[in-house]
Image (cartoon, rainbow, N blue to C red; front, side):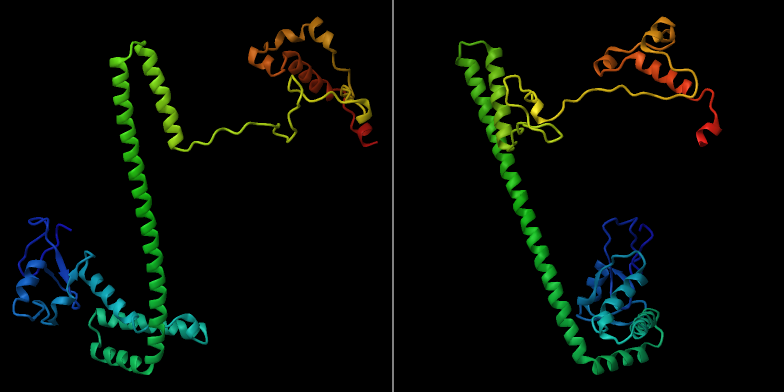
Length: 316
């Protein structure tokens, strides 16, 4: 952007950081000061191409390349008339040809190719499709109006939310000032312990903040994660099941079949010294119900399971 300069007064962005370049329909740029000087008499032409210009058509340059600015302006002007949609054509091929025609018109006008013939073609199209152009303009206008209304409503709601937040923030600040003044008065005129007074005020301020933030109390849990309700007994346990309700659960140890020698028992794990090679469980693991003997016995069972393996017996 520092290399941009006004072609008339040669002022650059480097020498004047506040330089505002403006562009017109011809695509050539002028700084705002040169535009004002050019139209002191009410009319003027481009210093580079002598195209007659109007002051109202000048706008601030948005793109670094003035040719891009020119093409964008031409495209907007053409699409106001070439406003047909895909549903206005019988086939997709016709719609694609229509889009190709628009691109050709924009290219010719942007690069000053067959400008006279292209403008005649545009005028002919406008005469032949006048009713369709006006109809589509009204449709686009209604759509833009609806979108504008939605944006305005959203903007209004956002402003109301910001105003409400600002009011709440002011109220919180006022409440804090009142609390501080009350605390100072209490410390000055009360005969009680200063530490207790400060703690009481801190608790009161915290509760008022929670109330202002509308913090909902934590709901009391009345059931387990499985959906089973807590018991209503004095200990909070479920009632003891009765025999009439069905058989009680009885634990049956898992019987593991091996094709080799049987795995050692619990007593043999200790008596034969297998447990000496296993790390003792920590207090946290004990709290979770884990014991080192479980890991030792499981490892021995897995080791014994594959001994004396006979594939022929397995196939039978």
